Image: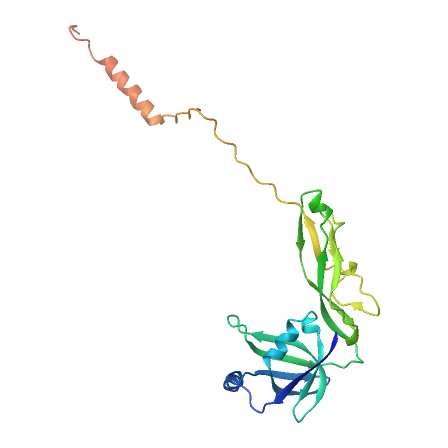
Length: 231
């Protein structure tokens, strides 16, 4: 989706980790501008401006103007970025030139709404498999997001990419059979049978060797002469 936003950028001659550190000390982030069959250009941008776009409703699908000091002024999109996992500072961003008259592939968020009947009536569980689909359209036709109703789904049923109403001249790039969400049955819990209170456990069988030993002792006792009797 195109927005009337312009971000300023400064060209940079050198690259590498040392240059990136120097830029971040100045409050800037390294970036690369490429696309439209033109040479890639190394620039630096204000990370706050980029983060505002990334956290907007249209996110990375926002088309805005990039004005390079002493250079070009062109519509662009954010196609990739890196952030510090701890401080969340923007470390690097890739910007792609956009030809507003040319169809391109874009990824758009998919939001599910409603409570499935399979959850409400059958006790199932709704699983969201993916939260975006890829489409092809003109840059000015990119929707902010798609909303799909999962209220009619029963256990074993699913909603696929082909079920999303795209509208206009937009075509689907994602596989039509790609599952967006489905309702599954909850796994039955295995319940152990409690032991009966007061039950006496059966005594373990006596080893055979012990039985034989006792029998031999009895035979020996039988062979002994009784006291007071002569042989």
